[in-house]
Image (tube, rainbow, N blue to C red; front, top):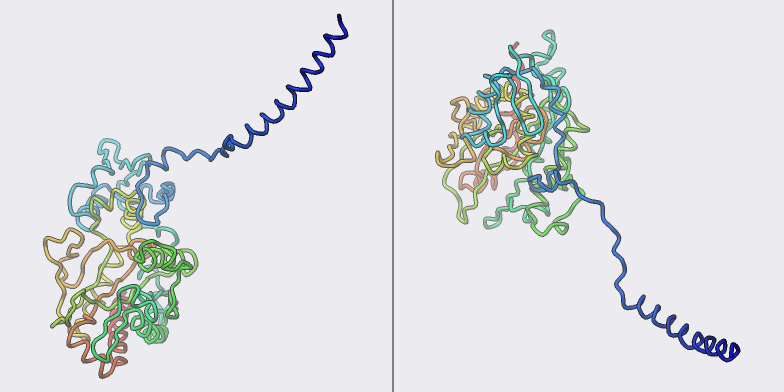
Length: 388
């Protein structure tokens, strides 16, 4: 009886084992592969609202500003230059009893008396830091010249090119020409000068093809690349951003004008971005405006004397710009360059390059415009830094 049973078991195994093997391989073939687990993203990062191409800030970098500003000075700068309404209260809480500000998870302690403001990312020199015995007005000063936009073959992409009959005007090309004329003028006055851009090429390694919107290339990626260069390598005491104003008009404008833009006027939508809010506080606490406002006054005065252009006025209903220090030429706006460069920034906006007077002058002698512009900036810097 045992022998037939053993044979039956063996025969059964010979039938079922191959079937099991075939089923195993069929299952492996039809079943989806187990996905590789991805690292979990911290909830705090998911909740962060950032500006285009922005990075989460490290709030501990504000530690150097502890006990440097009084509550009154902090609020005065916040209300009169950096904001225009009370929307900041959603993110900045003032604890009067404990004399500090609550900035999310970061506590900023106010001082009983204002202290000399430290630089932000690095220690830049102000006018008082220069040697009183210097023989040249700009001796000991390191100035970075930032020729606005890119120009050349990129001018059309960045929408800073105007064509009128046989005249082609490119802002990025003109700003670079002006910077190359201005740099030796400032060096003769004792300054060390570095150009943020030296050719008609972008600073960023990205291209327009890397973005779904070209604006992210020429306006965001490019300016952020320049900011890294300024803050991490050049480390100047001052940045002068050279621009030529222009409008979107399809026909030539009748008039020209001039103004200077300082950082400020953050809207509620901008303050909602954690990185923009952090950068605003960096500028407020580092005291850049203490140097910027009187310097901008002197440059504006020199430009008014030399360029002889009327002051530009933004519409009073525009929420993104406000007048500064009751000076007709000085305006506060939150631009990427004057927000990210971690030192005083003078953002120039003279002329109107698609105006009839400018087109006529440019057609006749563009070099005359560049030299005039450079001479006005050099004169303004000389007036300011010559004062003790």
